[in-house]
Each structure stands twice: as structure tokens, then as C-alpha cells.
Length: 414
Image (cartoon, rainbow, N blue to C red):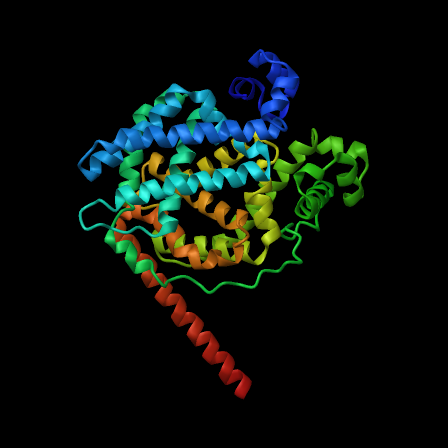
């Protein structure tokens, strides 16, 4: 399974090919596995267990907390560098395995999160990191690994170990406790929203993209076909072919446009602040609120995105890289995060949001916004300064909300 997935991807694997490569009959295959998916999940589980055992063994003999963390990150990087094919299955192709595989991945992430939290708790003072910060650390590390795997430079991960540890350590501080209790109330999501972010109006291309968004939100990427999209958009086959090469190309273009619309809607929040850090927190909060209000859009951008497999993973990797570059460009030179830290932080945010969407808790995203902002600001400003900015912004927002409520009450009374 590892060999065939590395060669052609999970979708191209067949039971006949698996049997030939393993040197067994199909009857032998079915003695052990019920299906291709069953074999894939068993392979994933074995890779995950082996990885956890290796990290535990490498860090168990270390006395100092910092050495335990260092050897843990080095072991993680070394596993991927030494076995890139297995790592690709577990970190990239797992998304092509469908909802059950993604659910298995979320469970595995929880095991890694438990390990990370335990090791960081050994630091002087025993800082207890919030679960979402720990989740972000694991997601950021996975982001770095995927980039190396997709670029064909898995061995370079051995040199990323120190940078990854430094980034993670920048998030480990007692100051993070100030975030407790912050964040906006849960919102009531609009379950009737179709996830098209207002794409219904426009030229023929936009009509096709809006139809694709609606269909994918209703039935998922797997149910998309060119005839269904054409019918929903009211266009001819010739018109569809003039704009897109096929379903995959059309779907990724839809995500591009939807992502641009969401970021454009959140940009004014960024521009209302006098400085970069405060504006970034306002923008992240606006994005969280937008996604919470439109669960269909959130599913498209953070769940269905993985359905096309590796091409969509590459699209996501490139998008995160663009967002990270934008993040760095807007920062003051004195507090500009490194390229590595920016990409790890944006990857961490993406991973945490994906968790909320995949577990159907999207309405809680506004409450998580301060932690998401911390994942970006702490590596750039330092943990103490980051929490001060976030707390001040949350206090400002409470004041604005309070004044708005008072104005509404006075208006009603009048």
C-alpha cells in the first residue's frame, strides 16, 4: 500500500495491484482486509503507531525537559526524512481516504497533542498550554512536513527541527493564561446558507462557480459532475469547457474565488486598526465569525477541499504560503516573523479551524479567535506582548458592543 500510494496516489490503487505487489492472491488479501479502504486505514494506523513509539523512545531517556522536546521534534523530522513514502501516506494521501480516514487522522493528532502537552508541562513553572495551542503546535509541525514532502525535499526536515522547536517554544509561556475567558460568544449559524458567499451574480464563469459551490455544499465534491454543474448554472458544455478543464479545475477555482471573497470581507477589520498586531487579531476574528455564520462555506473551504486529493493539498499549501507572505509583509520590521514561523503559524490556524469544522463545532470559532491570533502573534512579538494586544482588543470590543447595546436600548425607549 505504501509503495503504490507513493507512486500513483490512493485513488489509483486497486486490490489487484496490491495483491500483485505484495505477492499474494486476492483470496489472501480478503482474508486480512475487507476492502482497499480497510487496508489503507490499517496501513495508516501502523505508520502512526510506529511514529509515536519512535518519538516516545527517543525522548524517554532525556532528563531535561528541553532535551525531551528537542529529541521529540528531531525524531519526528527524522522519521519523515528516512521514510518519505510512509510519511506521504499519513500526512498527504490520508485526506484522499475519505471521512473515515480524516477522522482517524484527528484521533492520531490527539495522541500527538497529548505527548506534546506532557513534555511542555515539564518546563520550569510547568506551563499548562491551552488545548487549542497544543493543537496548533501539532498542526504547524504537520504543515511544515507536508510542504517538504510535496516539494520532494523531505530530507531537509532534519534541518527544520531546531526552527520547529523554537517556534513551538515561543508559544509556551504562562502569559497565555490571559486568554482564558476571552473571545466572542458562539453564533447561531445559518444552516440554510449555501456557501457561495454571494457568487450568484456575475458573468458566465461566476455563474458556473456559484453553481459548483452550491452543489458541493449540498452533496459534497464526490457528487460533482460536469452535467450537474452545467444544469445548475444554466450554461452549455461549450461554455463550461471554455472556462475549465474539468470538475477538479472548476472546484479549485471555486475555492480560490470564495477564499478571496472571505478575505476581502475581513480586510476592512484589519484596516480599522492603527497597528499590525491589532489589525491581524481583528481580521482573524472577522474570518472566524464569517465561517461560523456560514457552515456550508466552512465545510467547502476546510473539509471538501481535501476531496480532490493531492492537487487540492498542493493548492492548500500554496494558499497558506501566500497568506504567510502577506502576514510578514504587513508586519513592522522589528516584529516581522521569519518565513518559517509565519508558515507554521498560518498552518497552525488552518489546522485548528479544520478541527472545528470536521467536528461540527464551527459556531464556536469566534470564541477561539484569541487563541488563533496568539498562534501568529506570539512568535512575532513574544508571548507577553501578544497576549497584551489580544486582551486590549477584546476589551475594546466589549466596550464597543456595550455602547451599541446601550444605544439600542435608548433608541427602543425613545
